[in-house]
Image (cartoon, rainbow, N blue to C red):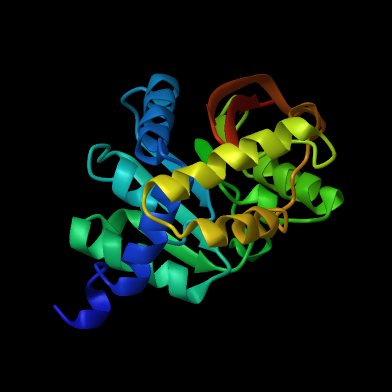
Amino acid sequence: MTEKLTFNSKNTIAYEENARVSIPTYDTLFAMVQSYFRTQLGEKEASLLVIGAGGGNELAAWGPSNPKWTFTGVDPSKEMLQMAENKSIQLGIESRVQLIQGTTADLPPSESKFDAASCILVLHFIEDVQQKLELLQTIKGKLKPGAPFVLVTAYGDPDDTELQDRINVWKSFFFDVGYDSSKLDEMGKGIMNISFIPEHHIEQLLEESGFTNITRFYSTGLFAGWICHAE
C-alpha cells in the first residue's frame, strides 16, 4: 500500500488527537450515536447520510460492525475526504461508502431518501443562522419520514458568563495534556471564532426544519448532541 493510502499520516494523527483533547468523550460519543441508530434501524439494510464526513471517524466507528449499513459522506475539504477514503480502504468497507466533495447541495438527485443522518461538529462552523437553518432543512428533506437524525455542535450564549466558564474548562483539557499555559488564553479567544448559539435556539432550528422528538443526549465541555426524527 502506498503512503497516500495510509491514514496514519501526521495530519490525520494531529486532527484526531486534537479532537480527542477538545472532546474527552469523543469516542464515547460515536459509540452512543451508533447505539441510537441501531435501536432505530434494527437489523435491516440502511443508508446513512454523513454531513462533515471528512476524517472518516463516523465510517470507522460504525462501518465495520454494521455490515448492512451504507454511507454517503459529504465534506467540502478534499484533504479531509482523503482521510475518510483511506480509512474506508484500510477497514475494507469502501464498497459501502460514497464520498462527495462539497455540501448537501452537491448530493446527486435521487428519488430514494436516507434511513438516517448525522451532522457531527459541523453546524458551529456556519456563522449565519439562516444558513444553519437551511442546512438542517436540506438534511431533513433527504430523510425518510421518521428517520433518526443526530446533531452535535458547540452551543452557548456568547454574552453569558456560563459559556466563558465552560471555555475555561475546555482550556484545562489542553493544559492537562501538556499545552503551554501561555497559549491557553489565545486559544480561548480563538474558540470564539466559531458560531455559538444557545441551546434553546438550536432546538428551535431543529423544530423549524421539521424534526420532532428532540432530545439532548450528550454534553461535554463546549459541545452537546441532540437526537430527533424527521417528520
